[in-house]
Image (tube, rainbow, N blue to C red; front, side):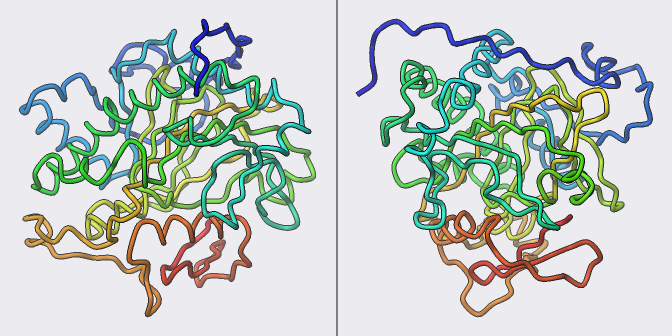
Length: 383
């Protein structure tokens, strides 16, 4: 049971200044000033979620979202219902599991990814293998939308009510509208995908507070400045609060890694493997990675707030063949590489969580790519 006493004020988390080239872009849309540095930014669509309140607005936004997922795999969301002040407080709360919890207490709340196939709790630094003997310097704390399902560190407990309210907001006011846009894009009833995503219960969605710590120069050289290997997310939709410390890059169609620009109080959205399966390959996930920040931001930590959404555990990983779009163009999923592919979201989720960062990867035919087979599906990692 959550404490109903007044919520205290957490220590204020001070975000580092945006990189020089980003400062030029913290102006109202559309952008008109070119960066002063030679940084290759991805050209991502900006979707105004306030337009989703009407059917005509949703149809218009659906066209934008489908085009964005086909072109870059990512897009921004603005006017999502959280003010800048609310977002700033969310980041204050997000830092508590790292700055206000002792290393000894963290051990009590370690996640058991291999055993449970769930990220609940802490993933501490050094868990994932990056390459050439380098381990990651990323720490994250993960909560289910129903924050009462397990105990949390003492310093986080006064804020659980706020975290749960945030979870409900993103689920009903951000995720559901996005899912409706994607259903419209498939010419399906609007709530087709919504009905597959329950707020609590048997679903694998989770909130992640994540902190990237600076690494040694030796580790940077050995890993070629890669902090998190290129990958696709395994879930349905990923929601990320835009971060002032740069690092996120996406692999464009022309094979170039492009930076994701920071937009204050915007959300960065991308689709994952599960959405690819359900859409018959119509919504394909885009490969993305995290690298060392630009020179003017090195030495800072990088704090993030993520929501990884996954359909209900009992949802079958099958294309929605009733889609008129799929009836016209067919399905294309070329990643099934086994005789026993995952049949439900639960199987896929548990296998991917248990394997990530722990598997002995094999060289792929492409240069700089490693691969593994997870539950009959070919999974590639780009280094």
